[in-house]
Length: 322
Image (cartoon, rainbow, N blue to C red; front, side, top):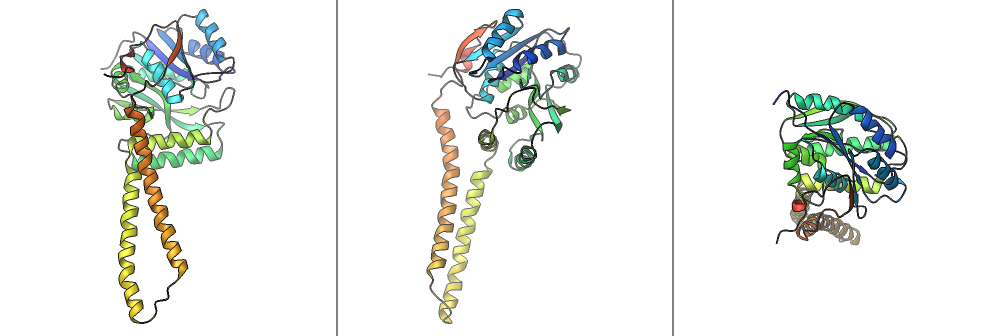
């Protein structure tokens, strides 16, 4: 597989309200890939600021810049998927458009691809411009995922990664709605290589991942690649049942020796404890059932409003089988 020939490199980037970054991002991609055959597939995920106008002007100035505009905001992971569906290259790089991930690292990724790697994922050694809270919670998240995940996931790796066409085609066969692309690219296998880099602060604007979305993203990751929550609920049920069985002979002994004192407090605490555990278990089961319900509806992952400089993708992946 060494010394591969690059026919076309596709860069896939989602954008949501990035008017302060859109033009700078396109310019840096163009400069970083000078001399290479490339296309930039930008997915406008329902922007409400001046991002669409900036992207339209960039596409008119350079036909290699291709715009896929979604009908509304479908979410970061779905927007990346839309870009991957429309990418025509035999090598595809996923990258965020906030310039925290440097486009200048892509040629180095290509060197690893030419040497035989099918997937090259960038791992963050430093994360400039991020709060201690976000750094700590990210560390906790990767630790938890490393313990409960059914597939090996690299710590401190984001969506910034290169995929060979074979790996991408395997990835695109996975059409689940609750998407965790970092785990999905690990799941498909092939030869994978880590590439350390220093993640920069945002070029402009604010993060599109507030705490609420971060929590939801973490839940999607855990539920997609682990049954640990359901197993925890099962273990909790066994523990409570064991405590209840152990309490029976203890109560009998106390009763025999006249030490048994009925109390409302004990009853209330026991009821609240068991009720809380039961509700927790039901909630965990409900989370998985809800995901099953989302899947069986078989709705398309996204709806495209318009395309610029790009032909319609093969929508066979999005059609609902009869």
